[in-house]
Image (cartoon, rainbow, N blue to C red; front, side, top):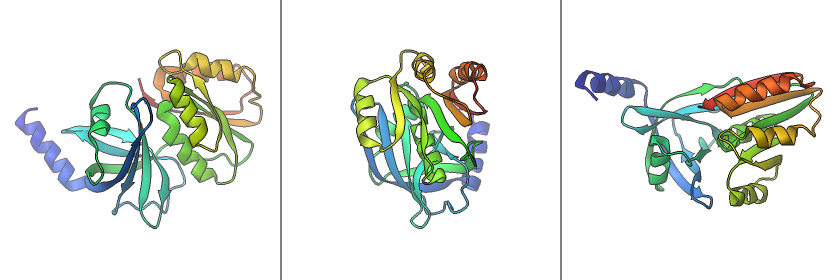
Length: 227
């Protein structure tokens, strides 16, 4: 990185960055999926009415967006769910974290996903969407959410079923974004009078939206994460 770019990044971070602290970190087996409990003392969570994303610093000059789930307004704590199966700075960052570490972030912003006012809520995505849909469920309160999340590892699917009290089905992921597993699940479901949320792998989101347009799905809300 050249000196001018590094200087600009330093100015950007000094103006906008804030810090949080890792309270605990847990991994699923195999260790490619992590839950990170964090305290963000400067983060006001009281006005959240949509699923949010936090821009986290994972390496010098590099940031990744993660979704805060299970947040507590009073204690300013939340949990991030990070899929680290793909090699890269984000995976290296989460694999290096320890309790007590500081985490730098430069902003929190709203996504397009919020609870539907009426009708069913159906969610579709890959393992990167677990935190996203947990946040949607928190916003929805007692309103039930159904759907399917594609997960490659069999043991991760077992842990998903044991860990979450949720009417969302973990389906086998046989392709990069879980398209085949999700569409197989969707063929037997009724999408009428429903708001369908699609998130995760961007090309898969595009294909799923096209496929859903051919059904009786009412509203389709797409939020791409990665490609």
